[in-house]
Amino acid sequence: MIFKLAALGALGYAGYRYYEKNRVDRNGVAFAGGEPEGNFRNAGSESTASHDRMSSIDEALDETYPASDATAKY
View (tube, helix red, strand yellow):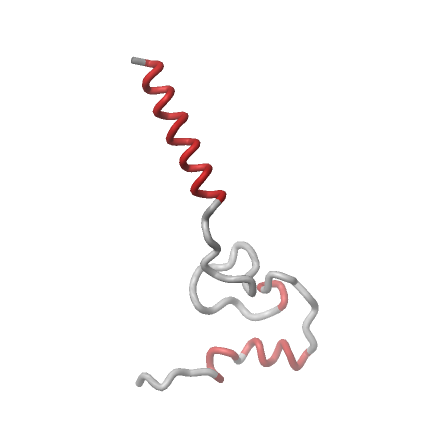
């Protein structure tokens, strides 16, 4: 009985590890690790995957993104 439970636990753990290894990143390449899932990320270079330094113009544009691309669904 204990061996069956141990085998079932090992099988479940192996399945979990396989799932985590092959999980698709839903945020995409523009998001840094630890960013919340969704269509928008926090503004600034620390929230991007590459962490490249942004110019002041790029950072200002990045901060206004949701407002400048508002949808016409109202």
